[in-house]
Amino acid sequence: MANGRDTRQIKRIRNEILVALKVVYPAALQARQLTRSLLVLFPTLEFDHVKRDLHYLKEKGYVERVIADPDNDNGLTPWRRRWFRLTTAGMELADRCIQDPALEE
Amino acid sequence: MAGTPTARKSSKARATARQKPACARQRDGHADRWNQQVHAHRRRQASVAAVLDQTFGRLAVCSPDLWERRAYLMLVGLVYERLATGEDEIPTDELVALAKILAENRRADARTHENHRAKKADDTTASGTGELPDRFGDIVRQVYGTSFQTSDA
Image (cartoon, chains in turn brown, yellow):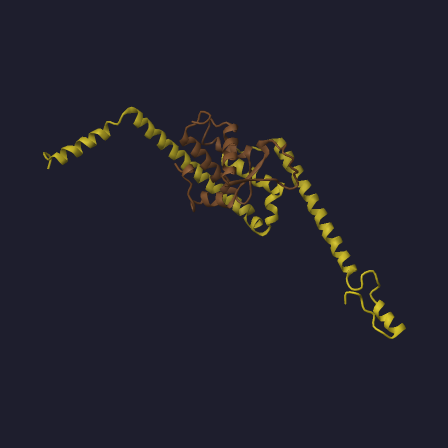
């Protein structure tokens, strides 16, 4: 359990993040937009969960932050308004070309 | 044969399967509901992907520099969000923000074009003998009877 979520739900949410980002690739989505679309499947989802999962996926190299031109990021952009895009590894995972046991159900 | 141990075992297994514990039946029910929801969500996302591809696909392929432009990201994100969540109304503040960003983007594009034009004009002027007039070489030949050569020639 992590923050009241079981392993299966964590994996499902992470997978859905990848699927959503794959739909708009090579563009990106704001964390706020991602959360709203995930609420369709996970009505009790909280933004902090998405934030944790985005951070995790970023650390794993599946997702990257996009600093949109002409934004200047001095670290003060709120999380909800940050843009995220799939990396090439994230795209391969979303396309099931590669596998990650930590994300498989 | 009905009386054989194997047959007895299989009928017993069937009976056990029929009498699944309540928690297992509930779990199956949850899984079925989840699968249906995911399936519906996937269908919707596939439609969203088709719309995005028709609207922005060619643009995205032809202009990779757009991928990090805020106006492009805002438009794609907004279209995705509205279609994927099934909301049909855009709040006024979002529309205002989008309009401002598009206007800003247009101004930035215009500035970039102007800069390119100015640079091109500078390059044209600077070609040949740099600061010297175009016919300077001819004048030197007429006056001194020799060819004028620039230092990088």
